[in-house]
Length: 114
Length: 111
Image 1 (cartoon, rainbow over the protein chains, first blue to last red):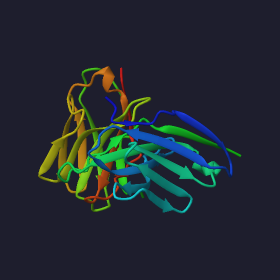
Image 2 (image 1 turned 120 degrees about the vertical axis):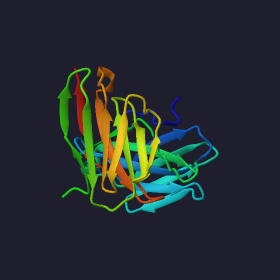
Image 3 (image 1 turned 90 degrees about the vertical axis):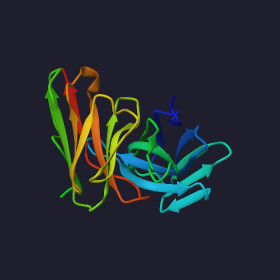
Image 4 (image 1 turned 180 degrees about the vertical axis):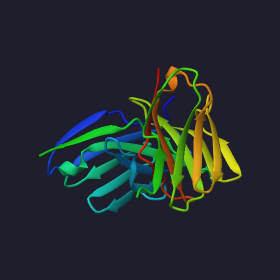
């Protein structure tokens, strides 16, 4: 029973265009969401996060949008660059005490074409 | 130097063997975590520790044990390895309510 779903295993985008990666969740107790980026042979690295009290968070070329009613979040990368090619994981956590355990989606492989 | 170091990076072993994966960190974080990643799946939490005296089971702890030898060291053991434990294993650390920082992983193959 996947509580965090990334339904697109892969996405290809032209350099300079917008990349939109999507994530859906089912657990209404989740209140904090993160995106991680992973290159081959490396561990995931934190990219951007958003709390459920917000609907948008921006950091440079990266913006995360949260739609709580639809239980959906998305990561926008504008403009996309070849170095953005990586696997992107969506993760969520709920206020289960102070545990902050993360539940990950299965990832989306983004390829930015030069 | 990496902030979160996992050893070994790769390991091939046989069914029934005892395996230990080690993780050390220089970030000074109290919280440490072990995850596994299987093809087509996200990372799943095996065990986590909030300090040296605190160990908690995660989503998939069966067949695994951990030891928190010091604030900076958290090891994962497979007492009797089986083929379906073949996976990519990640260690992570964090401060409370802050994003987790991951090591580069250990690729474990059990024949």
